[in-house]
Image 1 (tube, rainbow, N blue to C red):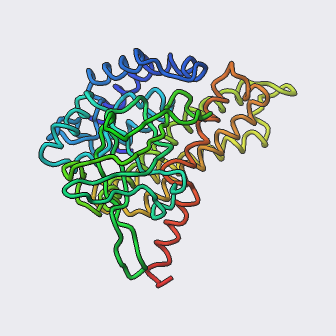
Image 2 (image 1 turned 90 degrees about the horizontal axis):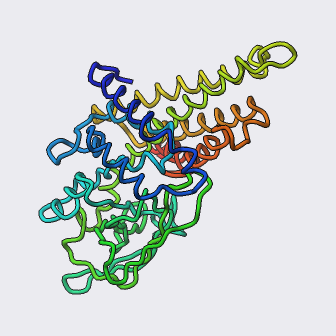
Length: 384
């Protein structure tokens, strides 16, 4: 990571914030399965006071203006705890920077000021990784658009004020065949025909909500298109790759926390008159954790450097996402094994960190999808 003097101060600030405002609530939130609105708004308020809220957005729109190195430090620390808690430290999705005209005051600025919350609504029941099978569609009706369809697994800390909804608005003929034109719409909660409900409960990150959205003849004006009609995926891809880098950074943070627990236990737990870490079966697990974490941190740092220089590719982001999430899962599973039966007891945080780690290999694109992206980057230049 880029540890400039400013980033060292940033790291000190976020560590202190986490210890005071976040960690004390972890076990309770996991047990209860929700974050109270009072606690969430408290975290939100405190993060605003010390400048963490909207730190990812440029200063010119009211954000903190952190570069990618600074954001990687933040996300790494946030990753040590649950999304249910740290998501209240808002990082509005950068796609909102595409807002123009009245959209800025209605959507972008309120999100920067914590006056509104948004959801990024792309995934559908039958269109997870296969975006081109998306069934949500919007058809032109005079000067308006009529939106129909549904979304699921749309995550966030609380009920949003609006959703950034992706829908097909037609088709294009390309050298690779017919492809849907995907458009992003800004859809306010409360709009006639737009229904939003909490979705299924997840064993990972208990208390972090996912929502199901349905649209039944929702009438939208052309002013509610974000960016340009038909260019929704191109618009989102500008920032989606960075989301995978942030997943990688959070995985590194969680892996570091797990590693600290594992090595302390291995050093102090005695069997046959010796610490269990002195036995090769345990010691080699610790060595693998150390190697994996070091490698993952280097991958994140390299990708962030490339992004700051405008050179990062989709394959770079995919490598970070798949390696860091797989590394974290191995570290979490090995830690459960090192702790033995105690690793699965609710009295220790190991089982919670283990459960939370599992989701990282799935959201923001599964490991299999990341490997597909990498494979494509290797073969396409060769005509494969």
